Length: 248
Image 1 (spheres, rainbow, N blue to C red):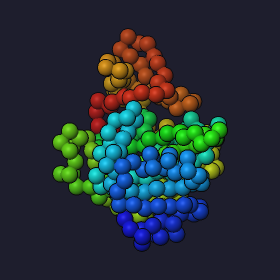
Image 2 (image 1 turned 30 degrees about the vertical axis):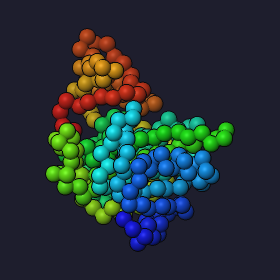
Image 3 (image 1 turned 45 degrees about the horizontal axis):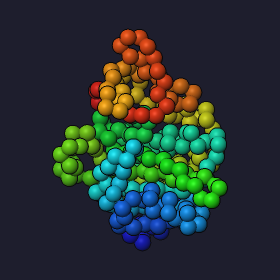
Image 4 (image 1 turned 135 degrees about the vertical axis):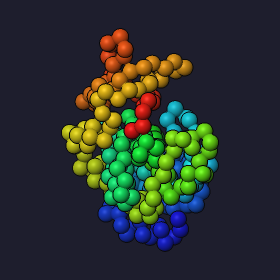
């Protein structure tokens, strides 16, 4: 991506944004949190082609060697804040479907899969600026990434979408801002539930260094994952990690 890409994205996004496009950085989320502390405005956007220290949830490394790595600075609102990761997943899914012609599925809570392969991860973090809390939403999408370039440890689970990267970036931002600025919890619930894996999906629930078999039973009103264990007991997961035993 270059200056021409930056201009194309700005022209295509239906909301005024402060946009920086760079070839490489350590972490777009970290950069944007630093920018927020330095006075950056809401709806500041940072896009990189490559991250040298990309990370996912719970500090795990995130493969960032060629694709779309995008972070957005958003205001913190009490009603929408608990659902920002979910609405972002909906926004990215819609953008991928429009620009790449693919149909993503959400693996609760923050991963998007296409044809059984992970193509996107989302990381939402908060940053305190003075007494004001704000949100940084990081979105990493594998775009036009050859399968052979993935490290061997993720080659069997990682996938990529094929499309114009600038067009996908603009589509993601438009969908995200539409859902965020005109937030409706009912609309987000309905859209997210339609994308998430179905009832009866066999899962592995990870808690620390232990793993538990379970089946998905649906999503709660706050979009926690309701699971049922083999002994018949149920639990609503608000955070944590699950793995799907079969391809989505």
